[in-house]
Image 1: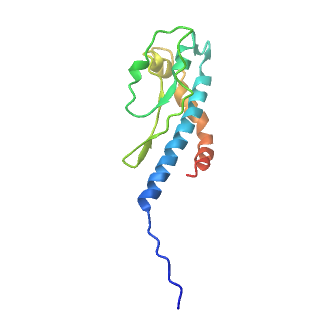
Image 2: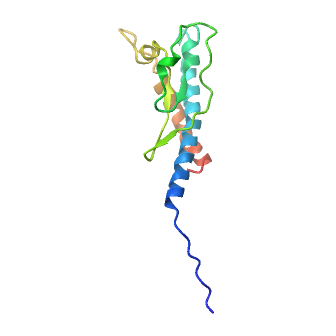
Image 3: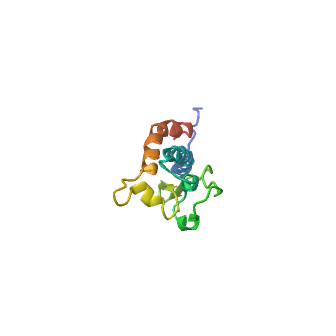
Length: 141
């Protein structure tokens, strides 16, 4: 009697969902790397007076209310970063935000008047980008 072929069911939805979940975890790790580089962009005399802006940089999922982070500059302000946030999966896409909710964060980043800005978030992302392939590989994406 011939061996009976085993019939396997293709579980495309399961594979896609697991892949998106892994991408979300990888994006969370990448966000922490980019956050670290962005913070290194700000130093004494180069965007840092009290350190509040540097400590305010963190990742968040879409929909995060950034304005809740706005506080007065002071040496004892809390560290908002260094906390992993997985990327949010919605409609087949994975998203994560990196930024600061301080009112003065955008003018320091983009510049104002004759000040050209420090572009600390964009520079941090650019410096982290070479590590993205390794992070994706680590999460089997």
